[in-house]
Length: 391
Image (tube, rainbow, N blue to C red; front, side):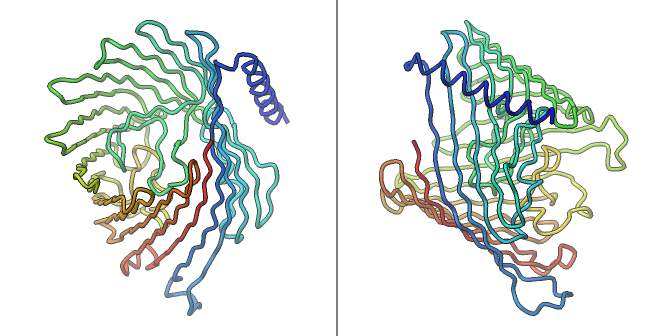
């Protein structure tokens, strides 16, 4: 009951802020989108089961996003972002606990109702105040702390990791944190952030960024969820249009876990855009995870769980090609190979601009264990059709 009261107070507080900001129209913004997305999934069952035909599941998602920003005065700003999702589908595709799960210190996600086949959920993933003056910037509340530099796997993104496969969530998750940044000059800054998760475990770290001879550097050091000391860094640059990025983190356990006391995660990528706007991209990841505890095929879809668990395979390779077929139609092909567990992913997306602020997308995702019995010897094909209006 106490938790529901907190959530109601937050909603009431946001409404009051929106009403107050309405009196100063030049100082506030409201944006977002509404999308509808039916999807289907077909998968081959484990050969040891009694089934002799592929299984199929379906889902329909109605997704609304609202982003509210209020510039209270020249130094203070308030931002809130929320997702509203109505999901209907096969019972296997509806998991109320997973959908309403909130990794933050404060639970800002709740289901209005849920059945075996439907669910309506609201989640606040941004709710913060910002103070910015001279060379200082301070932020308090739910926010995104994005320290990653590579495209798919981010060992430096220790505060709020995300899954590459979650294409319908471009904003990415946030965390409950306090962050302060000092800007030394236009290309150099130092940052300290501290966050607590739903288990009240604290992550705290320092970041320093600088630029030397057209190369951007960053260094990080801190503690991850009170279990690991983490040190790492990243660099990004380009050579005649060829962009290269790399980042690494070393985690050393300070508590007894029963696993290896240290883990190294390194990602490196290249991307290049040709004159005809064809973009080619590749990235590799090494992280010395224990592949014996990899889990089933769909563990690849759910990963990463944290910056320490970016993949269920030690060696991973990603490739991507994107090309504007017409001014309104863009096509993308992508693939991943999980070397140690001999599994792969292939993806296709077509994005078409129907009209101003109205887009249609078709996305296909295919996973296969290539006969790896240890992972269930499964093949999964998913298809999504999305119509999205932005405002």
